[in-house]
Length: 462
Image (cartoon, rainbow, N blue to C red):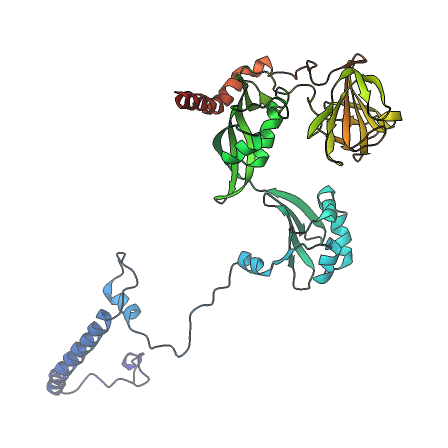
């Protein structure tokens, strides 16, 4: 058998090609119909299978048909579920691993960590980390802490949520040290316009107009230098407010700042608008750019009534004799906060004769104010302490020569006593002249909403 006589597709040698050609032709004619029948049968079977196999895609396919036949053949049903198992994202696993704790009365960071098996060394490490984490000493009931632990039970991350707009995030680094940062969440602010008419009191009018109490208190603070809301309010007075309502995910969280306001007191118009200058300083100004603030508060305490006014001759209820009264006595509940009427420096804080517990503040070179009969001092108030306007300096009491709890308030100009109720108070600085174009541009929209109120009042009066 020669090399050419071998068939490499079989393990058998081929027969010699020589022989009877007639018998070979006869065999060929015999096998041909059989082969054709087999081919037709295979084509029919394949055609049936292909038409019942669902297409894998609708896009055009340039692959030749014969090459695609292999991929179109139906496969046997699997004996087990061969669907690939996809691992959940890391973020979802982490989210499921967070432990959420609502702080209860008596809880501390140390006690919370101990309950969850976190070592005391970790507590000390975080508490001493920086100024942000030192505030964890003052966690309050109702606030939330979230903990994420690793496989060994060690703290990986912590979230402290003091309120809905801020989160303190503490996380462990690769070197096993901890870092922290504050995450601030922006609330969506929407302006709201409300107006009211006074029949009995400002707060009743606000309630009737669906104005929140904190907003009406801010309104009184804005106009408090020009209007005494305890003495000057008249029936028929009107007011309008444009203020913000703050939302998160379409849910109202709280009320925001007053953007503009108008108050009509005894026929006199007062308007104010909030303005933030290019340096970031914000305050309230009249439409022409004058500050709504004065250098001093007209009344340094929320009072019920005035028991004694400024007088050169008054019968003293304790000493039972006539003497001058160089201040104003504001009757208020014991413990009511007393506020500094202006920026300045405390030059006296202690007991002094009939004044009892007394605080005296110097405001620049010309003005001093005095606050007597205090029940106690605010934390940190002492001689030499600088204070800001509106800062709490003490609390109403009846120390010294007093028949009941009240604040004795004095106002002096160049050492001379003046009537706090009538003295002309110096104004704060107006909008800087270079900012006036910016001021008019930024406040126009809010002032326009107040002009809408004027048209409404005019229509109602006809």
